[in-house]
Image 1 (cartoon, each protein chain N blue to C red):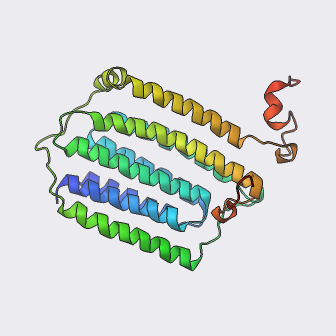
Image 2: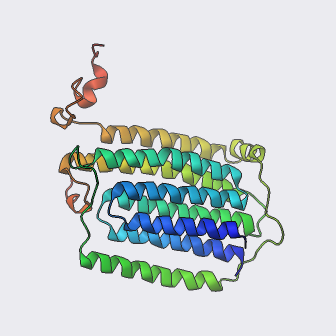
Image 3: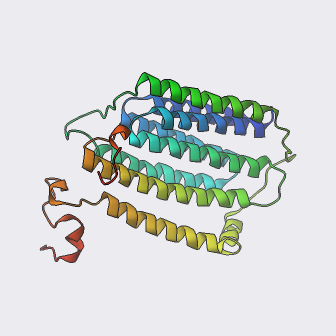
Length: 102
Length: 188
């Protein structure tokens, strides 16, 4: 199996681990961490195609840089939401977040 | 295929699975930091040095601190040593794992048999100078937009996480009242 295929397989495995965490876990923080893991798996794909792909340009690396910046912003906002949820409901279980203007 | 790749991939997969299985949130966060370190190592191994160091600085240095702060700020009791979370119901676990298995069963065979065009020989070299030229040239608008996104989202995060009413204030913080704090002069 070629290195590109192995990189894609690794990123698939990481994506599925993140997806399982998002779907199964009940804690809002762990769901956010699962989303982060899925984003990282996508970044790994960009780097793998930049390294082994046929294209001659460097757009993949630039895209990963922007992706990391946006993921950092997403983590900050998501964890602020978790803290706001905890302040209102005294828990971070997703089951508690079932009301608007709670 | 080098041994380094296999070792880094093993580190990533094992720590990520352990992080997502662990019932202790602090263990999960710390194990996921190891996953991010492994991914940074993979970027370095692939030759994307700048991305590897960015990953290390942003994730290992920044996001992990935010996650750990969120974990510690949302403990149920101040003296609770472990942050245990309630387990999901059986139905949720089965449905979630089934959906994940379905996605994996679609993706993995597609990955394995995909006829990918590949570069022969050594990988491309990308110097930091070239990245700087790309960011300041063709991607300048994107850099500015990302700057605006980061600023707005961080201000929004601050607004969301700031206490609204007096009873939301932790007991050690008795100065000012939440969001109005910026308007009044605080005695020093």
